[in-house]
Length: 200
Image (tube, rainbow, N blue to C red; front, side, top):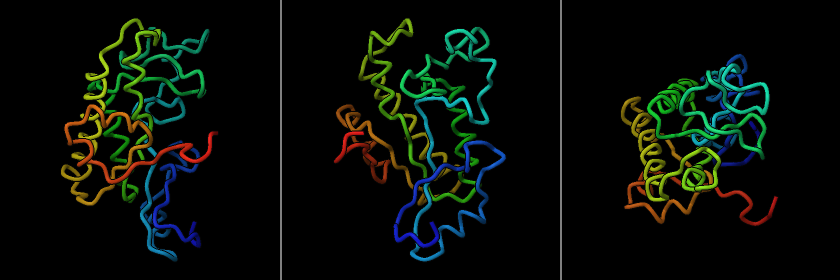
């Protein structure tokens, strides 16, 4: 990383996703200032919960079927069959948003310059009547709630935490712009799109 000639580098806030291996502000500053000046951006999934993160309790997940059990919080949805250990979340839940902001604080405290927000397109899941969650909401409502969460993240980092230039970069989910009154586009600093030129 220290010799790579890139303006932006996106990494996890931890070497292996755990608290024990999280980067320090000294380490992110070293990565930022060695060679070409660059922004160091932290990956942050806001549309799915990951079972190796500090906030996840293994007791939430039933042994059989690997789905949320009786002890799981109300916002935890079904497992993502394409990504083991990831679970859909009701991202509009106040409890989940408190969790995300606590995660964001760790990222800010570690000296990152912004966040790379994953599973923005999670709004499509909750608008799908075949999602097997037992309920769905309209695409307009699902998209609006995701936009509100992204705005909340931006406000917390830029205003509450005083990081006025904190970068907000969503990954995928560009279809959300169809439901945007302009707030979302004015909030974000860029967008990352997977498989734009190559499939898989």
